[in-house]
Image (cartoon, rainbow, N blue to C red; front, side):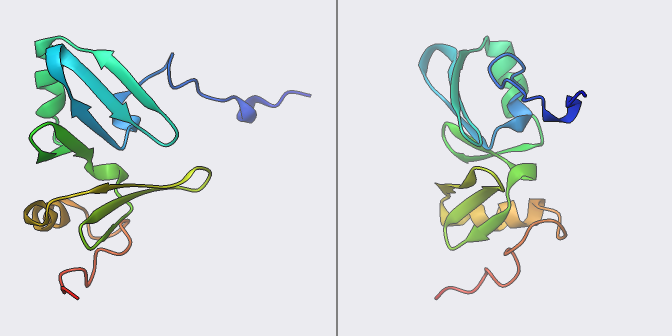
Amino acid sequence: MMNVGLEKKDVYEDFDPHDTYFFKIGAHGLVCFHGRNYSIKQRLSAEQTSELVTDPSFYRISTNCYVNLPKIAEIRDNVVLFRDEVHGIKTIQVPRRNLEQIKRLLPVSGHRGTAGMDQVG
């Protein structure tokens, strides 16, 4: 009997930046990608980095940090949450000035917790 559906994807061999939650750009082309249960550092060329930061899936939240908009599960206060049923929740702080723009860029359906988050407590 074969269990084809139980194959595990090796994130290091089959790495795709669009599977990550966010990434940070460091010195000399070093980019650190943060995903469900991993952080992967890769050295990218200037062209690859430029292609990545201009991709509409990613939104710049600080000088060197970009979040993957389709992976955002919820926004609470100044925190963006990325949720995975197996690995739990990963979060990142986002400056308040960027939160409104992120909310506008997110599709209304499919992202829990974004409604009513405009109120400051």
